[in-house]
Image (tube, rainbow, N blue to C red; front, side, top):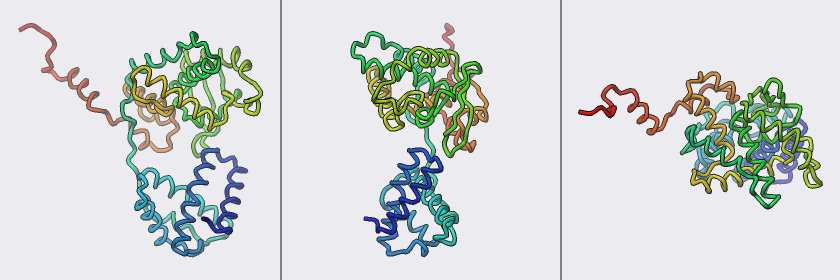
Length: 314
């Protein structure tokens, strides 16, 4: 249990971040990360003003002992570093010790079983077959999944970015979307392929207004009429069902983003263009798509090796 002082400090920080326009996912992360840190210093009987580099290192070790994954530890430490920056700005502390320690970096890995181009085409084609659905509620969800899947595969948008889109962000004349609430507040432009542009235009011009009702009217400013939490839940549930029905690996919304980067690289796209399209701040993040699997290596070997059997009779 947090002390009253720590609760008050956390609530004030949350209020400040909401005013600054922090995304709901970021707020949720703060609500988890900061109490975890407060638990640590209360168990150690430390004051916030006493937290130095040694204690900051101990906290990272504390997370390791708790069994958190490296990527999760890195995320938790980043959140605390930002929190201490806020505390310094409020004159609660004199310096930020978390800036001075080497944080654990988790290995960035691609999801297993990313779909090759042909299988992705089949998957997307299957999502467009929803007209025979008799239940109206199910029909709406399947139609939404079809539109969102084409959009995310075309643009590489994250699920949070997709849920935050508004009508004004979309320019059909240029086939572009302005992402105004990207990760870390970085705006960027993404591009719609021809098919994604056409199905999204039909949705906006002919279907969207028909879907606005009492339950979603409060979200009528959003392109897809769902709150972020509800949107992510619906899309991932429907993706899980659709991939299972096809006998595909269980896909999530983030697979579209990874698959786009993977396919662009396979087609010969320059990695720096992929970095810009996906909004990666560091090229190192984009370089995960260069890690080919053994299936890819075998295909390349069979195609290029001069002694590969070509089916010529002996």
